[in-house]
Image 1 (cartoon, helix red, strand yellow):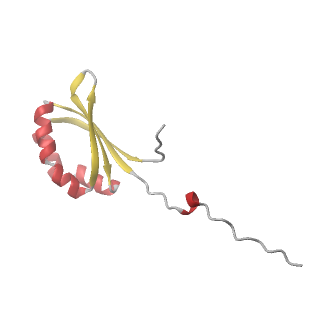
Image 2 (cartoon, helix red, strand yellow):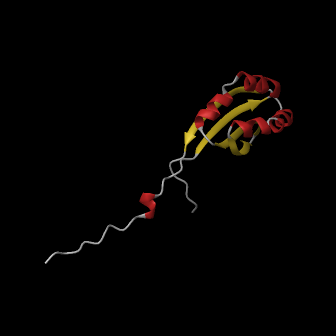
Image 3 (cartoon, one colour):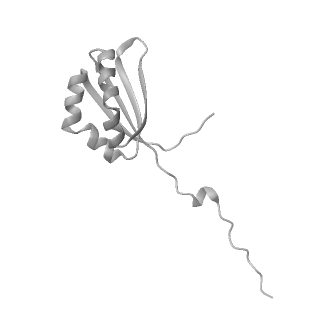
Length: 113
């Protein structure tokens, strides 16, 4: 007598391809936040065209001219190309950016508690 073995049940978590989220964290001092913000807003179209999906702006609690720009990108390759481009370096100078620090990040987990 042969035994029938049921096919393995699929595990939706196993079969779904996880989409890796990619982010850039930039911390920089600016000469003047209001002046920087005008240039930042004016560059929204070129950021979007380069692959920026969304962003958050934060600043240090007691230092209004130290800005944190946290953004979601469609690829880190696109983000690096954009942030390292000569055109963006010129825009940073115009905006009064002082010594930006770029950190490129791949999300490994995201949960809400």
